[in-house]
Figure 1 (tube, helix red, strand yellow):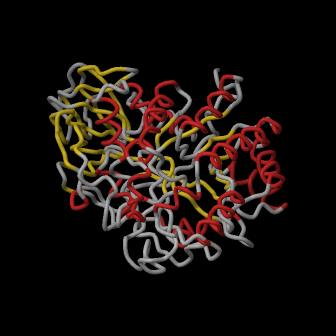
Figure 2 (figure 1 turned 180 degrees about the vertical axis):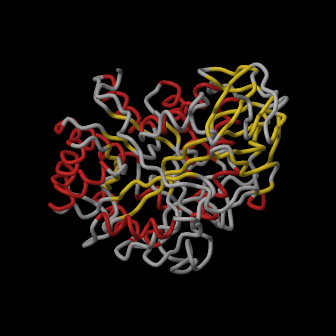
Figure 3 (figure 1 turned 90 degrees about the horizontal axis):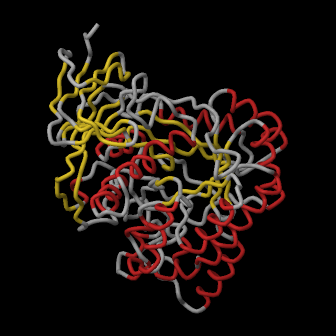
Length: 474
């Protein structure tokens, strides 16, 4: 039976751990055949001279989050909803995203999920899932909601050690870790020390140091290192796996590497901003465009992050896409001279995540192609319970592909991108390699810069339990 819905022929296909010349046959949204030659197909695509890679999985995206009334930058609006965010992701080779459904104080997790489903349903070009942000771990949340939601396919939560509206005490962290570990849920941790940050921020403001450049001084590596060490220690006490998000530099990486060397089930992600931006970018007139937390570090830090990816101390690369326009709706909500304390944290990056890492990782010789696919596709799918359907090209897996031209030279500029943000922090950077066609469950979404997908084709994903080994070196 060879009546395939779609056949991609002539490409070098990433199967197993390397490229192989083969054709791919798709039926009913799944990979139905991998063979030297496949004839037929209702639609056929010539991949000659290109590489067919698994669709990317971006497991850390903030999209259309309602503003937190307790945040310092309250009222700032995210620029991307699920339509523009998923469109942007697809053009960058990402076919699955996992976004955050935030619980606010006094709200149940189910209420938070209901709000977020209403924002996403029928609005995505690509498949998507949710992490829950827990800011109010009541007894009902811990004892009833978390176990019930795991059974319904919500298998990860995120907690914060910083931000006044979100920060949990150490006791609350222990209780959340205990509850999540008991039912097979993975806890993600934003590790920065809030009290240190507030003390430094108050001192800087008293000195009149309020420009965006001082955001980095209010959040030095030490506050990330301390909170990372504390998160690891609390998880070790409970015996729970954790994932440290957006690790920015050497000091936190050293803590994570040491914990993993002792066999603790600790995994960690980093983001392109810690490879391609630096604290120097905060010193410009438009420095607020590069403000995120943790902040970009000094230029000499980037090699340590690359080394963390190469050594396995860092297990995946996500965008931490947090899209705010550089106007009064977003970054400039409190005016162009507002203290860094009141500038919305976050930068756009959904579309540029994979091209940046492909170019400066694979094509520059810092990463093998297998490492790139692992970091951007397979590891996030495994860790967040999406394998075997996502993150790989294999018979029976979802037909999520990106066809890459490995020789294409592209200078990144905002007009090229498909988000709803009015800038990109990576403007002017030249990259080698870019996805030209992208499929989600066999449907062509992007074709040579033209949107082909149907809005609402993206489906909500109920995920299995996490894939973090209970010994890090297992």
